[in-house]
Image 1 (spheres, one colour):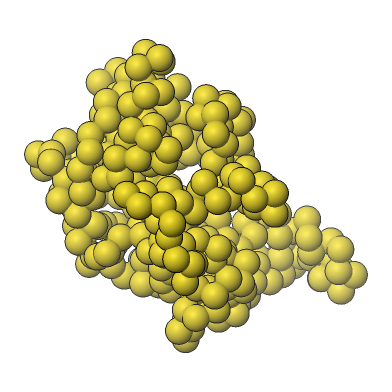
Image 2 (cartoon, rainbow, N blue to C red):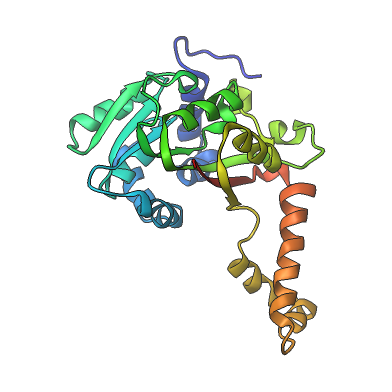
Length: 282
């Protein structure tokens, strides 16, 4: 572990500062929207495929009085982006940092009037009444929680019946993995950041235990449309999927095998794969 020389700085803040200053991590920082200029990061995020998917998934839960909660909001990247959809956003973050936490979010908020309020609070003990929000959102948050189960219980509690929970970019492990490979390759671990990863089925089962239903997992590995495109590069698979009458069935069968192997059995943990999850409160 790298010894910290920056007192009163959280491990995550220290890691982000290091990424920004090290040319070897510039692409990693850009990919994760860690730009020094938060406004620029939000602008790029608004144009991303990820945000387009968020819009498609959450728009049905948008109304003039919709209240959405962004937990583990950090400096507010997704919170500011979500306000563009028209919902009232409450951003929750525990870290007070002016670089990566609620301090940075509040500073940006002073110069950008929007339907957003920031609350410093622990996700494991949210300061809101039960059934307060139409939607709860988080990005790269669940795998950082000290207690995944307690965090999911709180999310379920504050959601209104009929509400939706969307979690993006949650790290996964193979079914029988110890997680050592994942931890070895994650650059933030050396700074002391609490990085975790779980089996995809663990996320599903814990959501189910908390009361969520209609749980959907997507985002890794390839979605069906992308899988079909890649399939055309293999002559045998291309021929199978082109067979009259049965080609479509072959394509779906091959995709199911692809999902089973790459999501559950042979997860390439050194590349830090992540899934996204959509779940509903009955």
